[in-house]
Image 1: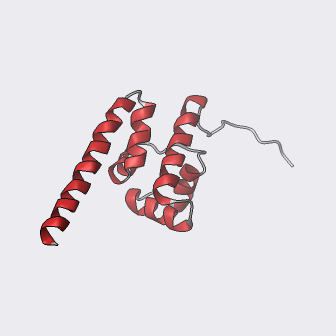
Image 2 (image 1 turned 45 degrees about the vertical axis):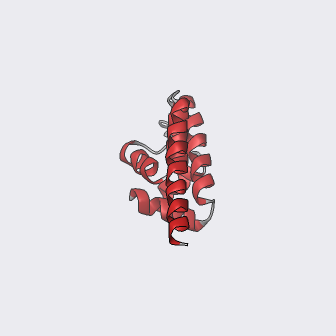
Length: 112
């Protein structure tokens, strides 16, 4: 058997933390089931293998995939804000969620 040679295609150490954060965010939002993989595939158009790498924290979503994940997942958006050193902006997401819940509650109270 020949020894493996060539370049490593794994993420660099700076990206390892982000990979873990994105993985944890996806699992918190979707769970760790096969359905979670299918949902992330639908959101991004990425392959099953690629999404499984994200969930396992071995790779970081890049470019359009990362934007698509943030568009669909508040947890991923929060992780990106924390990784960018802008964690204080997370409160805006929470306030938006609270506002929507209050509007839903007001609608239920008016109808009931």
